[in-house]
Length: 126
Image 1 (cartoon, rainbow, N blue to C red):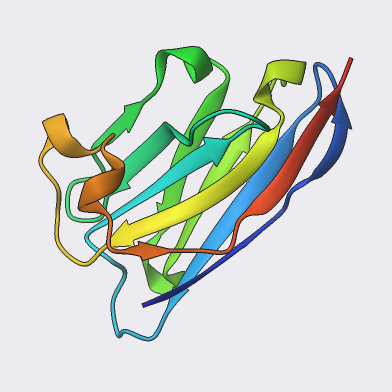
Image 2: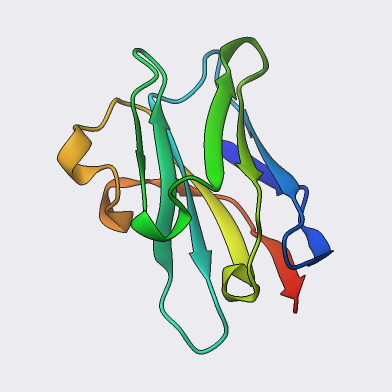
């Protein structure tokens, strides 16, 4: 599956952005889709994930109450709504997918995702 992420940009602290990730190359939406991010000089980290079949989500504590994830199965698209953005949210955000559903305990692990998008830059100014 091919993943195309978009929606990044420059925003002031406290602002909002919505990222989109479109999955193409298959008839139905992947079983699990997720967002990861990588800040300059840091390792890539998990942000949010969602399962197609039951809508179950998992998120990183650092984005709790500020970010939400949603999906449109008909459009094979996952959205990451980011509110109350902070400078520390600055990173390249990557969309990832796996064709099958992932158990809750593994949804935050990079190793279980087989497909990755090219990334979209999010910059939050103070």
